[in-house]
Image 1 (cartoon, rainbow, N blue to C red):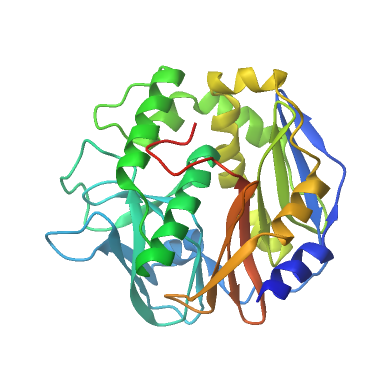
Image 2 (cartoon, one colour):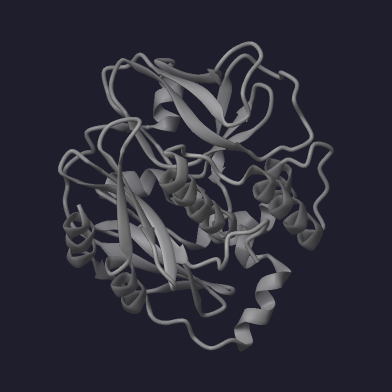
Length: 316
């Protein structure tokens, strides 16, 4: 499966960069007009043929129940936020749920101050966990899979990092909800979304903040990128607005997008049977970390970030 990652990276071309304020998007291009053989979470929930709920009336913080009653597989994206039920959660990894399948999915809580039902089912949100947090979560989940086979994050680290980021962004939330932090900066975040648009043949992007690589997301089809791009731009934009990033402008360059792609291709890889379709690949090294879902003879999604450093209670 390592060759699959190498082949996926080897196929892409880096397009013309687009910049707004302190963030730059380097489009990753790999042509093809084929439609995806799955639908995304938003489409599945909107159709009424899928839903997400607590696993029971009592509930469990690190797990949710996903029910797919449609005739299509559904792609759930690493870091995608689900709001409602007893508390808001994010998905711990990318999962491809087969048609007409019910399963438990691994999640992390991003609303430390609530454990009370607001709804029977979850709704999807227009955002993904911010990229700094995703980097740390990827490393924590990889460590959990290696040590115990479980797809668990360090929940306390997630809560601590959200709390620290709220302080830096001067955001208030009665339940310490990540969603409130995004909403408090929504005007600024949406300016980034407006500035970055998909281009022809785009299947992903490398993002840089203050001239330093912040992360990468790569998909198997341009249509998937087009549908999920705005969510991912919001993820990186919130980090671009974080005052802690201002100090990075004086740090040494951490490489070009091509350098980062080369680094990812060389990372050590562990393989695990996915809880949905395919194989989970976990990538680790001194310089970067990441994860990929390999299914249906291809890499469906790859995300990678510069290494967040030693695994601890935070990301920065």
